[in-house]
Image (cartoon, rainbow, N blue to C red; front, side, top):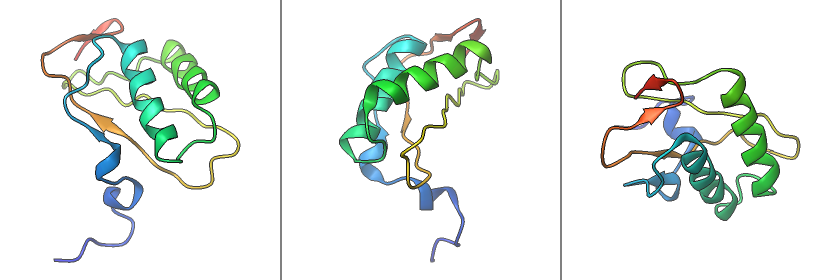
Length: 99
């Protein structure tokens, strides 16, 4: 079965999936996924992207209460929408909301 155009799969690839995450807190995980995005040429520089994502997370906690957090950022120089995803081996607290 073909993946329909515009599905989430169009915006990621296997190299952007981190299982399991090594880091155990929000800042560490954002850093870990930011490095993966840089290694895969999805962002031009890891530090500005990391800082933008961390600042966004501090402004608005992205934990949804169902064990998922969707940290994100906008950054100039990014040509294509991409996302990295990871899963922690054990439950953890994301900011002030459990995830």
